[in-house]
Amino acid sequence: MIEKTLSIIKPDGVSKNLIGDIIKRIEGQGLKVKAMKMIHMSKEQAKDFYAVHDGKPFFESVTDFMSSGPCVVMILEGGDVIKKYRDLMGATNFEDAEEGTIRREFATNIEKNVVHGSDAPETAAFEIGYFFNALEIVG
Ligand code: ATP
Ligand code: MG
Image (cartoon, rainbow, N blue to C red; front, side):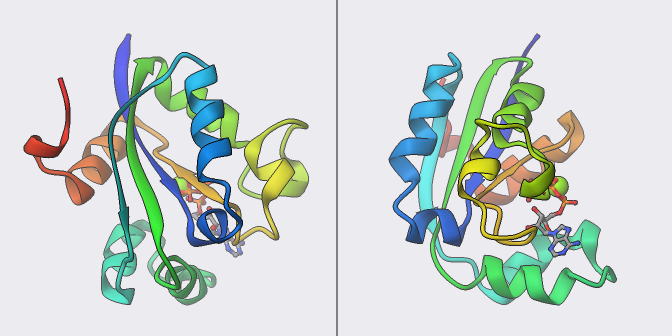
């Protein structure tokens, strides 16, 4: 089934000059970039984005991190794209991630893990609407 997902190259990925490498991997899987922009989230915007994690021990720290510098946000489209992109990213904790995944190769620790990807169709719909309006999405 053709579906969409929201991808973020997090501030550590941008500062490590990994934008091109990550897009190359996405396109290499046959996935299509349908929208893309660079943003720098405020602390409040990062807290709204990660609201599902409000109350967890890492919430303050991860929202500081996500608002610490620019991110690249993208909408990706393809068959089974939510799972395919999560497979490309690897596990949240890079030490558990498969060899060859983005997080395994480039993450610094469990928090600074380079990329985000939606985890289900409902979260993808919320996250896409959080960052993009209809005029910014091609097709
Ligand atoms: P993402 O939502 O960013 O794609 P994920 O779905 O693999 O990552 P989540 O459980 O949703 O993982 O956690 C969101 C983000 O919060 C993680 O990607 C990571 O940056 C941070 N995080 C998660 N768990 C921890 C932790 N135990 N300690 C520090 N940071 C964490
Ligand atoms: Mg998540």
